[in-house]
Image 1 (cartoon, protein in one colour):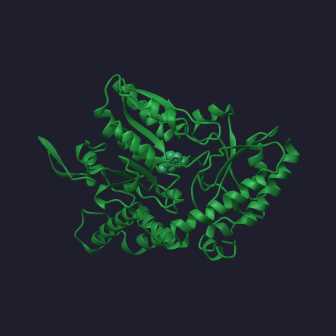
Image 2: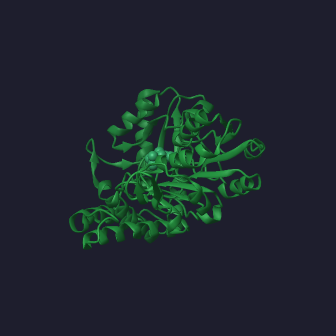
Image 3: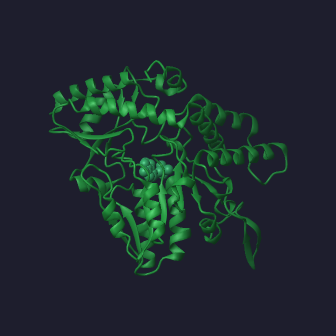
Length: 406
Ligand code: PMP
């Protein structure tokens, strides 16, 4: 579609109308966090104005409304991912979701000699929890390497799934390279070998249709703030058998059936993993975000972003001395790059002066940057609300910065 076709959708995002340093904002940092449509902002606001109460504990009207709204969001999210709502644990985001798997599934299951397999392209949130669990159990973390184009070395990955490997933790889409991993095939291969699979869906769920049941993983983690929802919202989907077997991670109210000093009877999953007062308003907003994304259509979003990626890739290829990291055939709209002779922070600073927001740094993926032998990259990450015109303005600003720096 053209920018004109998407103008009304772009208009749903109030923040995109602001200026930065006197220039129209060009927000190319959606892999970091996404912008929010008015419907999400209004749903959160309306919750506090009209329905605010705690969930589950109150029989009064507001308490029922709050509980219903919170549970409605769980159902919306479950429908969005094609899973059962009862198998979806609501939590603060992917970092919490992956730690929940680490502490409730891996810590009790793993023993000395076991291996946790992760890929080279993981976000720190999908590395550090496994290292912490490995330290406590005597298990070790093994790395599945990537190829120079930023795709997974699949034969090497399958060869690395030896008998000691108990768990594979893998990104659906890389936040640095944009690589889309064939998680369905990977999970099938893992399952054949008895390896439990944890898929980090942070960068997939906002950008393409995701059918978790079809992927066939054991665990799937998402984060709300990257998919048009509020910060501090996210979810872990897990196979029922795991949810039933896993002990709770955080203890407190809401997650129990009965407490006495002789012992405590835990609530059923998913509530067993949702101790304390959740981010109720945030989840109301996330429910609105799911409605919004489904209204636009995930297939349409994927198509639009694929077109924006192709345009941006083509434009960047004309900039002298530009090195693009991540050129896998299956790719989301993330462009990590460096320009010879220019530091990425300087590029990002000059771009900011032109109103362009890109991220510069290590993107919480030190091992991946080490593979490429660099200490930082500039990352432009796009979403459906961006435009072809913004890409052209960005490239002009980038070329201006290059001429100043390189
Ligand atoms: N994994 C990936 C691939 C990510 O991009 C991010 C966010 N940068 C995370 C995990 C962490 O998610 P959260 O912000 O929910 O903690």
